[in-house]
Length: 116
Image (cartoon, rainbow, N blue to C red; front, side, top):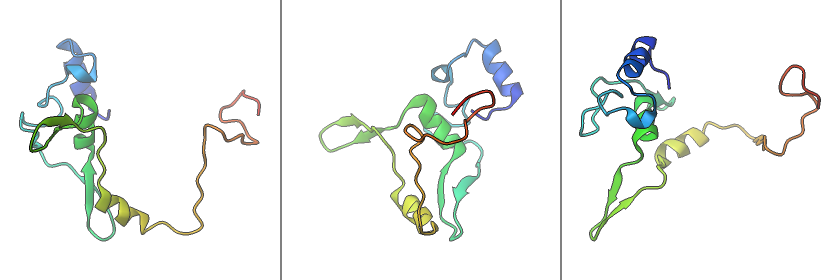
């Protein structure tokens, strides 16, 4: 989390040690989930914007909002901003290079003192 030391100290002094202990207000939101101060959203060259850092932090701490259907309330398991994703993918240049870091065996070790 990218909070200020002042905020972090205030949370610790008030006994809030976990993200789940924080309130919406602690994260900069009203109880209705509206940002109290507008923060910068991720933006693309064409002017479209994605989710703000504070909104992502709210979802990380509190979970996704419930999905309302005509018959019930259900939990959302993921959130995808498809329009933002498609716009971002249009900026990618071919050839694409995807590396699976879990299975990659690079010739150079990741950290000093390690062996390949």
